[in-house]
Length: 435
Image (cartoon, rainbow, N blue to C red; front, side, top):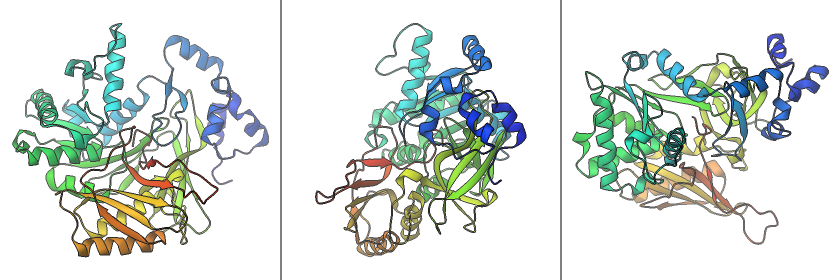
């Protein structure tokens, strides 16, 4: 039966209370996030897991909560980091920087930096300082975190000078000045813009390899990074609970990294080319997930449900925008924006009410508004995509969310409508805090 686990997988999960009813029925339905949380941790507890928790071989953690309510998880220590390191060491385009022992500089959300500082402080029996030193921001002997501010667009010159100095320090640890740059793509684009605007570009040592892994990377941002860095740039896709599942090569093609996993695709709506990503994974031995709905959406090369033909990861299922032509995902709007002009940097679609005019708010890499022709073309293409009138507004700044990720969509409802929604942006990122 399509999507059902193999006998080997069933043998591995036989003692887990959560799956007993499915094993008895001989059928496993799609596993939703609320089912994982119901009765936690007793619904996952086995004698082996209890022993692993007592021995420190398993730990309780929380998912990032960027795109959904924070979810309790059980996993081996450094589960996600080990998944990243393995992929880095095996990737054909960037494995050389792993093999050479290059330092990994991570430029991502301040929440990630704060987490590392907090863990290190607890190891010393203390609390982290308000602005942790570089020594307090090393995850291990390989990786340091450099961002200390929530919104990268609000970095001051002193912030940029400090980060560039810390990057240079990491590069000096290698005999040829090589280092690996791990990033949220938008954070790196902000750093490039500010370094160039403030005459600091010469102080930015070129990385030997780049991975962006924590959010959906807009096409224009990917193009901008390729224009400024002459090294392999790889995109990773994954999540806190699963680890990494796919990686891009330097040409942008996605390849599977499914050790201990299998994937199926289910259309999000009849006739839609957008598919929900359903994953079966025994990679985490303490919390194997069978037919788990990750919440991520994909499009395939031919619109089929063949997971071997995934072309792009296009957003979150909860953030799909209903339109007369069917659901629209973050990646769909991003394609429209990038096709009109490469100048657009950040964008957010604000929609109010059913069928009312939408506003597409945009910033640009050069800070100048789009030309009238560009704005008119973009408004027209967006209107065709979403099935409602749309106007384009230039902004010098679009605020980042509390999670440290940018929203692509903000939805509110008019007072005349009975259904209400929270009038705040949704965090429009795939990755689950991991990409």
